Length: 123
Image (cartoon, rainbow, N blue to C red):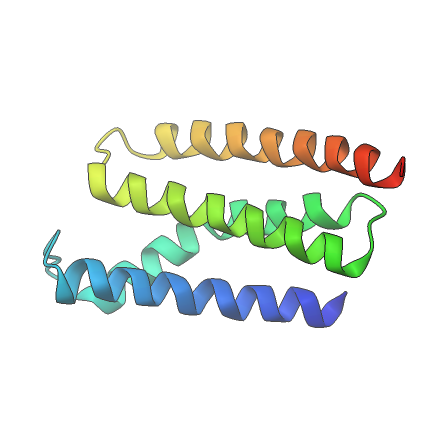
């Protein structure tokens, strides 16, 4: 599972950097005084705990490697959509809103993992 973890982390960072570059440098959605590089670093660090929780949720249930991989891809898609939506609406409420979003998504990840594992393992 170590290769999966490393691959997911590298993929996450690359995709977040690409999204922030597209948002700030190409589409000019929100101009940052510090540049798109800082935005990419800040957003990737801000959503890193949720990404780690997604990995843990996918690994917490006894699934085959390809099933855990599919689950991780789905979870990363959800994390990236949440990151993009939060970036686009530019939440000014700060850390409280992010914390509530993280908690809701983390709970959803573990619930979905449990339900999917029960379904796949019952076959």
